[in-house]
Every structure is written in structure tokens, then in C-alpha cells.
Image (cartoon, rainbow, N blue to C red):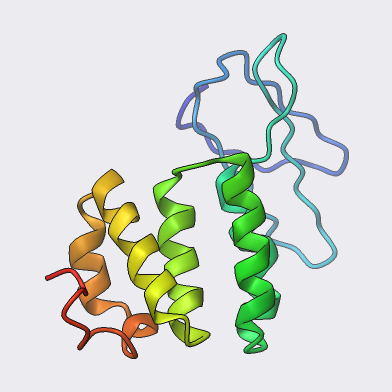
Amino acid sequence: MAGEEFDASPGTVVFLRDPAARRAAVATEANTTALAVGGAAGRPYEVSPWEWVAEAVPAWRAGDYTTARRTIEEGLREHPDNPSLLYDLACAEALDGAADAALEHLKRAIELKPEYASDAQREEDFASIRSDPRFPS
């Protein structure tokens, strides 16, 4: 039932008939794994754009922005014009010293999702390009 919370013993499987229902699982004890499986009936699984960024995070945290950029670019080939991927790519490009590419991708991300303009003003990753006159105001 939507909004219902309960403790699940080991091996518990929970089925939700409504694929649009929002759900979450939290493992609260050590050595516990929560696994969520789902998808639309009759359609193959599609990797969400977010997963490309998640894959780029280890390289990003290690300061390997070139590898992070390549990973996010792969996601853009699968999800062209995804504003989140474009924004995150712009962040990685700015950190990697690729100002022109960062500004281009940031501009496109903002065209697709205008609220990114205000986010960009606060984004620390854009410190190196914020003074560029092409940076969105």
C-alpha cells in the first residue's frame, strides 16, 4: 500500500502492482542488501541517464575528469539532449579545463531546463568559467 512502512525479514519479497508507485527500501542492519527490480511490461530495461553519472563518480572523485567526461558522453549518446547529463558534463569539462565545451554544454542544458541557470551560479565546479562573459547570468 502506498506510504506503508514495514520491517522485512530475510528473504522477503514485496510486490507492487502499480509501476508508477514511488517506492524505497532502506537496509538498516549491517550485511543487509535491498534489491529493487522493476520495469514496464513488454519493454526492455533502459539504463537511466542518472546511471551514467553514477558510473563517472569514482573517476570524478579521483580528479580524473577526462574519464568522467568520457563516461558521461557515452550516456549522452544513449540519451541525447538529456539536460542532467549535459549539466554534469559541463561541470566535468570545467574542472578539466575545457572551458569552451563546458560553456556550450551548460548553455544547452539551460535551454532544456531553465532552472539550471540559477544552479550554475552556485555550482563550485564552474568557478573556472564563471567570469567568462559567455557564462549564463
